[in-house]
Length: 263
Image 1 (tube, rainbow, N blue to C red):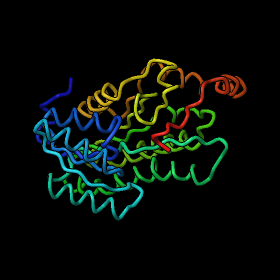
Image 2 (tube, one colour; image 1 turned 135 degrees about the vertical axis):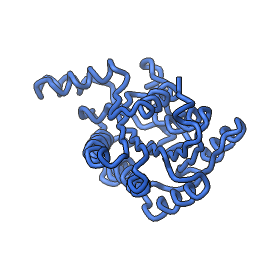
Image 3 (tube, rainbow, N blue to C red; image 1 turned 90 degrees about the vertical axis):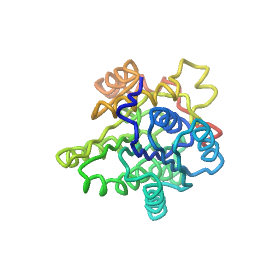
Image 4 (cartoon, rainbow, N blue to C red; image 1 turned 45 degrees about the vertical axis):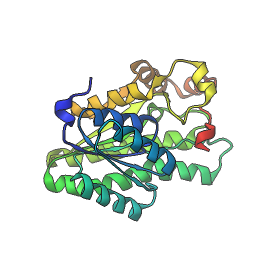
């Protein structure tokens, strides 16, 4: 259950908030009384999410922007803070998935740009104000894929590992200055990035459930949250195995494919 006491009246900015985990985080925080600012690249789902939240009486503002475009992102954040007030909670949720085999440099660099550079662009935009106020919370949504490399997913795994390390280091600097940082690392969640084959292959966590876990982690000031626990423990176990054994096991695993909607 999300704490209305925590979220009531807070200004919450979310990148990638028009679909998947980001959208569900916006819905839950809005239902708990937060003012919501959504940044997303695609206008139609952004408009749909805005209409959905507005129909419930939520205070919501949106700006269409690509997180890779630093100047445009800074302008978007400035616009949302003008309308909603200084950012209290920032959730960096924008992310994409592209397969990395056969290896294509352009596709791999696109994944790194969005998943890592996009997160850095967003956090570096909201952070100065939070530090000046000595108040605020930043959450970056990474993945359990950060723990161990997966076949066909070199760029995706690298991007999530990079985001985890970035947030871990930044947390050491921000903590003494009144700003909290959280890293959320879900397993496979039922979002537009997931293929129909992956949905039928096994039980997936819903985006709504994943968002609730992330928001509760923010409420409690948790530095990291890895879930589901079984998936996290399996990844940690794989990481601890001898390389030859780990490679043999991972090569036999089903590959994360690229969903048509993420093409």
